[in-house]
Length: 180
Image (tube, rainbow, N blue to C red; front, side, top):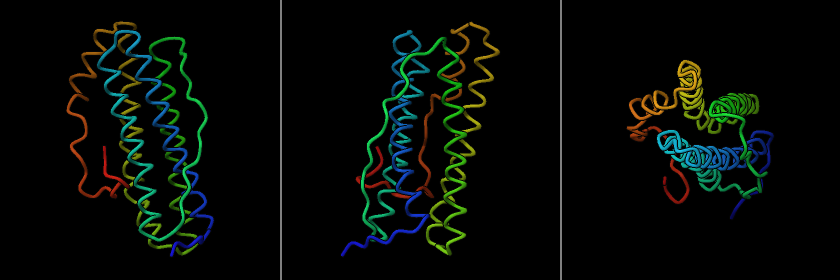
């Protein structure tokens, strides 16, 4: 029997499913922008980021399923697809990661404030993940600035530093349907 228990934390977590799917779509749009501008390393990086964000959404879905709490998949707005220059998508990504970080902090606080210790524990991995995400996008923004229009240097940096991709985190929550 599925419950429809609704706390502020659960509502925020439902909203986060949409935020994660929106981030996934935005990263696809960024990846396509870089693909269209013959920047395959940045495109590959952002395609991978898109999958990661999708997996985050599905981790939250699995949490609801495990807790026997009804979950609905929300619709999302269309992503931004046009950018003034090669640095703009990175700036957008950094802003997005900072916004998601605040959402995750608010979720952890809400779980703690409501005494939902299972929810608070669930949010710990996401807090750690957001530190990594903001650091990565901050570095990427810095390197894009240092490249000063030399896209070859920027592409080489991305290939050298981000090519390994994610090796997986054994502490990560399980994603509904499995990680992609």
